[in-house]
Length: 449
Ligand SMILES: Cc1ccc([C@@H]2N[C@@H](C)[C@@H](O)[C@H]2O)cc1
Image (cartoon, rainbow, N blue to C red; front, side):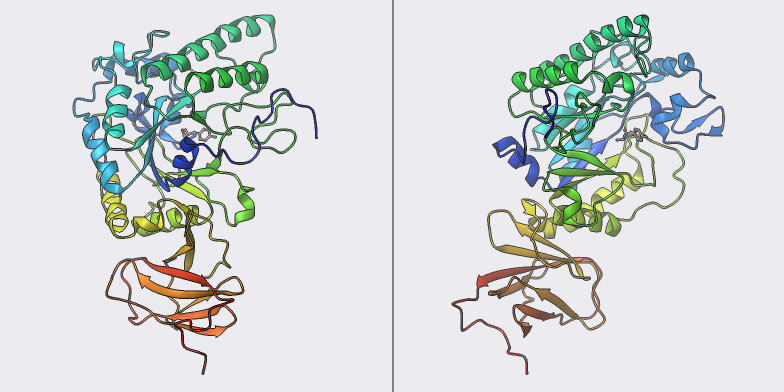
């Protein structure tokens, strides 16, 4: 291994209560809201074909004109309680909220810049009410913060000259000031979700970022920070020069999901996902495929089955309301979670052979296995292969307590669970209770004929 001053400071998973709680969340919500929500992907009647929250980077958009959107920010219908109630009904356990995106506009009244809600017609703090509304419903809050800040004249993409270095030193102090300000103003926040950290200017700040991370963790014991915040002294991001993960969980799964357990290297991780192909901020027109409730439920199941959390993005409208499509998805996911959330919360990788019918989830600390079924085979027989000397002692359906199943043993620790009905309208969950078979002779299952 290479001697590193600013590499990963912990190897393996954090075992403290705060991180164990994060690991158990299963389902989260992302909220992208800011000035970009006003143009919503359109400028002078032309469609921006990138992600709506990146419209300031479009050559058609003069930066100063974009920044004057601050004088239009007046979400008269914003109600933090209704956003949090929607999230609660959906069954999310944590929410990640943009405090400042790349454009530099702050949704809290920062005293380190004028480019904040305080100088908009709305005037009031947005972050405070959101933290309160979500937190009092038992939904933990994570604050999204973009290091890259297109509004701040001291921002640099790289540091080439003395002048760059002087300016960027000011920028680093500004960044530290804003982060300590956020932690001070919103002590209920459980973590920080960093973005905008890929440019050389920041990647070169291994020492500064490392000491800032230490300072923030000292200020807020248990604080959760992902792998995207800082690079090591060789510029390695997410995983340091010895291959150890930076931060507390892997933040690489943006709009993509790992295929198999070896893809996640035994680390914690979350997947952040958009409803359309690639829009985080509110976009008037959603082009391409819009994910359905069942698609999103399958993504959720896949993430939890591979030891991760699934975080679905909402892009509220400039008036502060949520768009219909997102409200409908929240309802659809919430309805499924009402019946099946037991298979999502406190779930982890079950270590069983993956089958075509769906995903296994093991309840942390138990021998309870959930089968989240998305693809019913024509045969109606769900194949289950358990570790040798393990038997199924009981199977039941989370959705219908009356329905029970008798597994047919077709080989050593290998079963078919025969489904009685043939049509299923919704994904469903079977619960397996397993027992050590080595001493068990009277297991309740049919011997193969
Ligand atoms: C190339 C790229 C950079 C930043 C992003 C930001 N990360 C997401 C979580 C959104 O905030 C998006 O704007 C997306 C793609």
